[in-house]
Image (cartoon, rainbow over all chains, first blue to last red; front, side, top):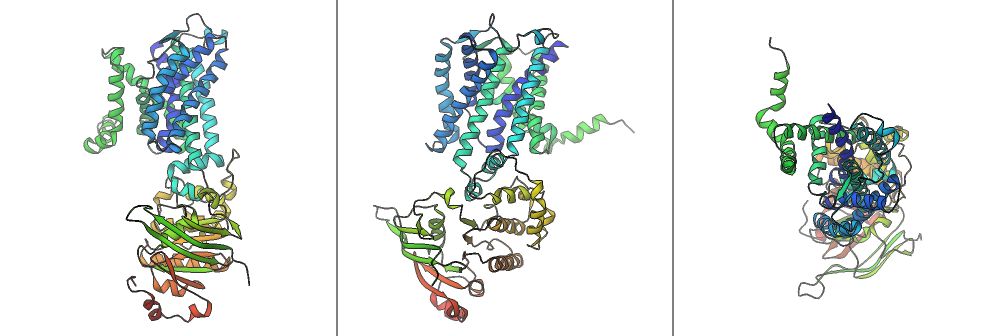
Length: 299
Length: 257
């Protein structure tokens, strides 16, 4: 039981990372590699801030700002420096590794005897692992609500239009450069925020914790899409978090089959590849049809 | 004599500068557009029709010359700033609309053309009646598809939407870049009729590129012919009304009928 609760908690926390990536990957149609650097950057900034005496809440917000700044650099390299977005992301991701080491002063930092957002009277009174579920729900709800509101504003509509048809957006006077820089900034800010929460959940920050983040976040997005199909924009945002939780269940199942934590990145990649191939596989093997048949009673 | 709303003064656009392939794709072009002018533009491929629109829109910088709007120099104004007074419909129906956004959302975007877009809510519902009314003027069923993603529309509906988006907020200058060319003849004719209605009814100032001689003769109060980056003919008023297709054909040889 507690292992399932723990998976839900992780799924919620990682849902924020998925929502962050959704802004660039799905709305702007960008393959943004910066996330592999901004996720540990958020963790590093948060832990370093807690070490220097900041409250966990302030430290978490600092993580958002740190991630956002890195995203802004990618945005500037892409829009003003005319570097392809994939390469701009890889450059910032690579540079972030050194920056993260600078921030922490070493390769990892423990939060063992430090305050975190999970260490308060209320959350500690809950049964095991429910603390991360409650915190996850609160943060995901706030983030989702803010993004949903934003996308319905005039600015948010201009942001969506930029991803949908940049030529049209420009012909309507929308500064596509500004929209893309803003999108990369907010997206990476959310990913930094996710990194900060994961670090507080795990009790440490590690300079290598960014490896594979993009695959996990993409898996949340794709699983949500495969499972729920055609949705409105607002529903799709919620589907990302549900996809993130489902992804944790899949991983849990695979670990139960005897794989260990060292195999996680291999498993993540295989899970994502399978879900991304779902439309092709479905055409060939009629998966939905077979599943539906398996669910109905025989006549 | 009214003042011109828009002027091109001695515009030159040079490409491949400093190489043996150096060529002026706009060659000392002068053009004065007056309020209410509906100018049809003809020219063979490579004559400079698209270059002319890209110069007006700010998409390509000019090598020499001056662009004036109501007497004010806008030669170095950015594309985004120019959208405050300028709107444009492209030949390709995919160019002018956002495919994953609905018809209503596209119209709402275009209503704020060239304006500041902030954190205020978009108020889509409050606009629906107005959108229903203006889309019904196109007579192609667009008013029943306001909540449909634009990518699912037919080419004709999508292009009609592009045209509405360009005119929903009155532009000081409207550029139509062969906007009916990608459609079948019947749909093309319907959109052309609707276009002409809107332009004449609202006294819009418009430049329209076309490769149909008939359309060029039938519509507008003024006709210009481009060749090799130069304006070779510029006729207006009665002179244009009395122009015959045979005379027009004599202006140039290699344009399709």
